Amino acid sequence: MLRLENIKIREELSSEDVLKIACNKNHVKYDDLQNFRIFRKSIDARNKEDIFYNYTIDICVKDEKRYSKLKKIDLAADEKLKLVLNRKSKKRPVIIGMGPAGLFCGLILSEYGLKPIIVEQGKRVEDRQKDVDEFIETGKLNTRSNIQFGEGGAGTFSDGKLTSGIHDPLCRIVLNRFVEFGAPEQITYVSKPHIGTDNLVKIVSNIRNHIISNGGEVLFNEKVIDFNIDNGILKSVITEKRELYTDTAVLAIGHSARDTFEKLYEKNIKMEKKNFSVGVRIEHSQKMVNEAQYGNKSKLNLPAADYKLAYHNKETGRSCYTFCMCPGGFVMASSSEENTIVVNRNEQICKRW
Ligand SMILES: Cc1cc2nc3c(=O)[nH]c(=O)nc-3n(C[C@H](O)[C@H](O)[C@H](O)COP(=O)(O)OP(=O)(O)OC[C@H]3O[C@@H](n4cnc5c(N)ncnc54)[C@H](O)[C@@H]3O)c2cc1C
Image 1 (cartoon, rainbow, N blue to C red):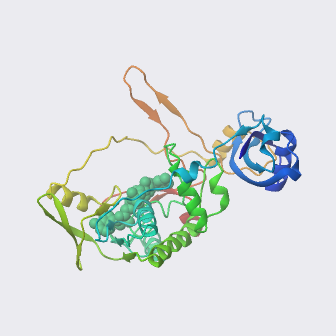
Image 2: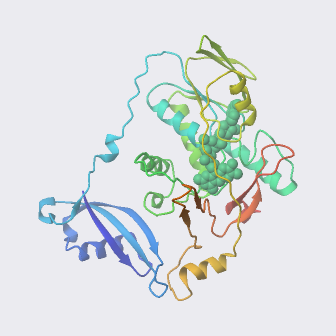
Image 3: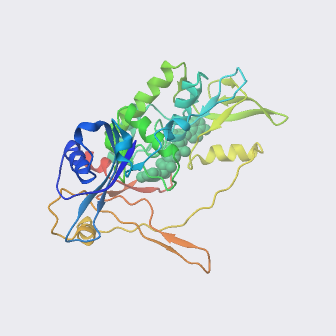
């Protein structure tokens, strides 16, 4: 596979037309093409007088040797990442929580024939939406099923922005899997991929159905409340309704399950603390951000602009950075506990509201 980089496009064009321009620029005969994928599409707005899209396109051609000057990429990179599970136990693994971590864990384990049991204290994503709407309209909170808790986890109602600060090849596999289950293909190449809550609800339920069709099981409205551990070995996971005998439990409980963390602490289960950052929430008018980033001359149909800033103090080793910006979004209440305040910014909920 060959990579065509720095394809600058200054108008709204179809993928096919962008491909033709990319081939032309790199002297690739259109007839030699066998296949292509848009690897990346970003907006270059450094010069307000000349804002353009920057594309990277991967192509397969008939006779690669003819194009020896073009950059070659390793097509097998994705395949190399295939996971190998060397598990001898016959007991079904239990996954606690069905946010992104639990969902993908369930997906992979079910595909390897391990028939995982997923326990989620909240509701199915379709039913969860009703509780979220009720909270937004009336302020009535369901502490088990809300913006943070339930199938799909805390990010489901954040409009499905796929943000990750890491550069791990597995990120691409996650994006590809989302596409397989119904996400728009462009999430695999736009620089700031975004699914949208309405799509995400369907995708999460498609993944759940796939897990079940592979022999997995999902227990909704059921909370894990205890662990039976004998001599440092897990014997069972205890929910409000039953005891699940297993030697493998994956805690995919997210950041906000304070009562479960207390239980783990009480049981002497080793936990590793993570560094945390303290921040402030800043609101700017979108018009101001758009003007600062794009100016007002571009004819392109540009999305709401965002920005990212970072500062690293070499003497103290401390950093300051912008995080989780939501262009065009609104600040929303996102509590999961009574008498506490959590706020988040969100686009989709406000559009529906
Ligand atoms: C308000 C808010 C807004 C956010 N916005 C963004 C964003 O815009 N973009 C972004 O990239 N990230 C965002 N994040 C972070 C993102 O949502 C998380 O990184 C991601 O959801 C973590 O996934 P997870 O699967 O580890 O945990 P979670 O998504 O938190 O899922 C954990 C699940 O475990 C369940 N659970 C917990 N304890 C138990 C138990 N004892 N028994 C059964 N089930 C249990 C919970 O109900 C929950 O559904 C946001 C987080 C919050 C809290």
